[in-house]
Image 1 (spheres, one colour):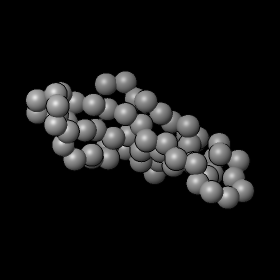
Image 2 (cartoon, one colour):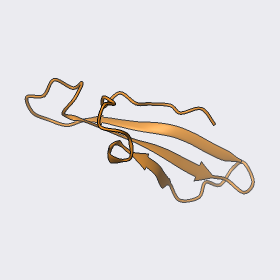
Image 3 (cartoon, one colour):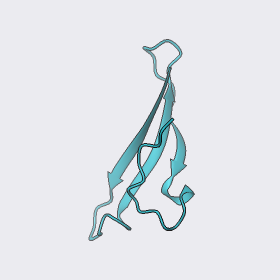
Length: 62
């Protein structure tokens, strides 16, 4: 079983939270039996997207 999700964090400070101050990463976690979870692995970071994208890129379809 594989779980894909977006971890999203607002950085503390004076930001607009559209172009700056937000950090999100797409994560995968695998479970061999549906009960035990493996280690989280980052699939994509904000830096992996084109510059014209905002910090609101979330929840890619799998």
